[in-house]
Image 1 (cartoon, rainbow, N blue to C red):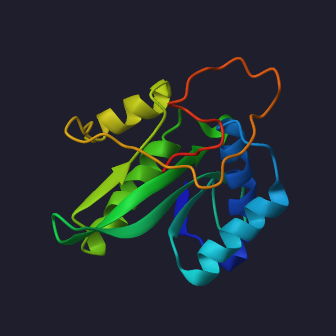
Image 2 (image 1 turned 135 degrees about the vertical axis):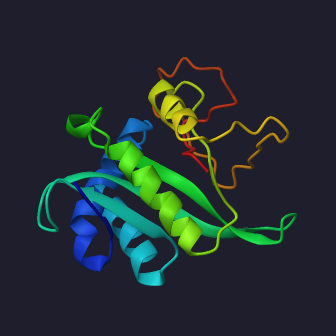
Length: 173
């Protein structure tokens, strides 16, 4: 397995995985929008995207992780938000997620970051187990809130969920 920092020449590979990631989180598939979003992140250097490939730079994409730089005002230090982690279904349970997370830690450390933060769905047992295994701690001192500035209609009229804490229009943030 090879883990590289993606750039615009890897756009198609990353966009394909990103589209699958969004589908996993119950978003409508939209490869064109996924490609535009990832292209903007790469061109603007808004994030660091690590790409796992099975062999070499021209091989099959296995997964990706996306890091967004930010700062901790209380700590007065740079931190990274590990916003997206996705491993293709065919490549799960062989260490891809662990390898991506370890590389993310290596890069954040090299950049002088004080910490990596992340959020995931409370029901994503595989992710919770991985993060715990890698030493991530649940933050019990702070609660997360959001304000939806662009409310979207439910995915379908038959959506039976009354759970206002997990809107179907929100990805991890």
